[in-house]
Image 1 (cartoon, rainbow, N blue to C red):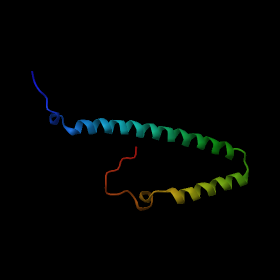
Image 2: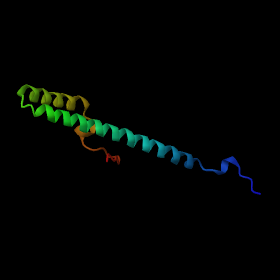
Image 3: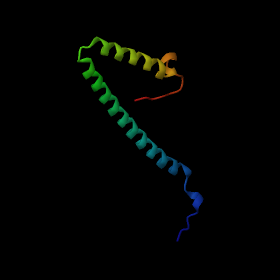
Image 4: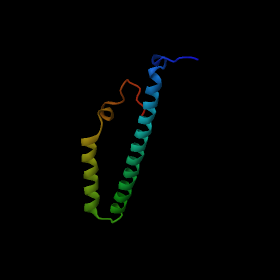
Length: 87
């Protein structure tokens, strides 16, 4: 019979398994956030369909302020030299 020492299994196998779990978790979170984003976009569309000028102005001002506060530095300075895949 063969005896297997504990150091014969490479550590990369464990890292691949952990990386796979992180990828699934990340994809589930991104999927949920995308659903929320589409839901909010639908509600904003319904608000705009009221044809109220004040609602329209408040939505535009809100989007403008949120873009200023939450836009990433990469959007302002262009893509970085590192290979970053968003989609």
